[in-house]
Amino acid sequence: MIQTPYYLIDKAKLLRNMEKIAYVRDKSGAKALLALKCFATWSVFDLMREYMDGTTSSSLYEVRLGREKFGGETHAYSVAYGDNEIEEVIGHADKIIFNSIGQLDRFADKASGIARGLRLNPGMSSSSFDLADPARPFSRLGEWDAAKVEAVMDRISGFMIHNNCENKDFGLFDRMLSEIEEKFGALLSRAEWISLGGGIHFTGDDYPVDAFCERLKAFSGRHGVQIYLEPGEASITRSTTLETTVLDTLNNGKDLAVVDSSIEAHMLDLLIYRESAKVEPNAGPHSVMICGKSCLAGDIFGEFRFPEPLKVGDRVSFQDAAGYTMVKKNWFNGVGMPSIAIRDFDGSVRLVREFTFADYEQSLS
Ligand SMILES: Cc1ncc(COP(=O)(O)O)c(C=O)c1O
Image (tube, rainbow, N blue to C red; front, side, top):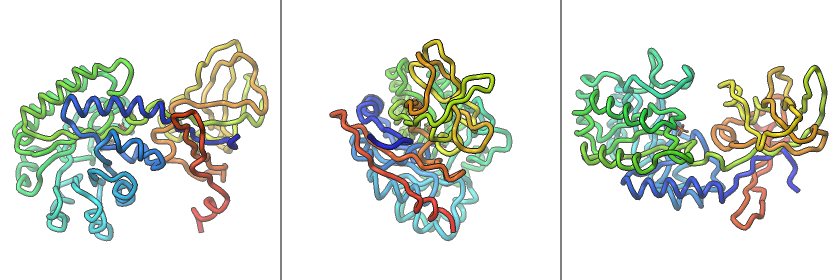
């Protein structure tokens, strides 16, 4: 028995996503790069690299991790690089995508040995959160003005456009891509490659994958470009749980259970976006509010239904715990860091990482 809390990555579930990604690559001709900002747990990269072309990154450390642990095609992107890191970034990357013309001006010469690209901001997105909307007013994420971009075409061979966000709606993806073609069409046709970023939930159950592949293929043919996709969430969705144990129960007007984890420390995105965690099957007569063990008053995973009242020692598994969780976990309150375990195809579970007091201590000085 592995001591909770731990993230449990199920390889068979991960494989379902990988097979869909491989299908899309095959049918559309697009290449797929894992977005490390979402998921960087390299213990399962041996499986993922069979189905994906490489990685994309948002920093020096991510690009280095991608190069060293995943291999394949390695794209470098960052909102801004510093003088102290640019050479190392270039050393790890096959392509570097600059966020602005200012960064391109500063670093294009240094990066002349690899392919260079620019992030475009089409001024529209599928995000329902202002916080995560790349097209929010005054957004710093990419260049908006086609005339300005035109002037630097001699120094770049491609573009990255990331404007989808948790987008399950193929129609919306299609419409936005058409608007992008209208806005930047002439420039797109002068590029050799275009990355359409992440945020497209094409590995979801009801997603019209064939229509998606056709659309990508038509886009690629029309503009004569190699398409890249940068799936983060779509690569790992529904592959992982966060396993916890009930430490205490109370009734303060509602039945409450405190588990040996913390939403703030271990599933931070849910707190940021004010979303509930997921528990399955979430059915039964007993409603319990599951709370984390940090001191934050709002450290609450959500309210769920159970067949029996929860008691100390019961296991609670939070679903869909791979994306933006392990990459964001933190030492708030010194809460014990979840280990990382993998369920192999034969059903056996092995622990791949444990964290101790030394890790906590070494994260500070
Ligand atoms: C440039 C870029 N590519 C890819 C991704 C991955 O997005 P997702 O995990 O929603 O697929 C993001 C997420 O913010 C991003 O900013």
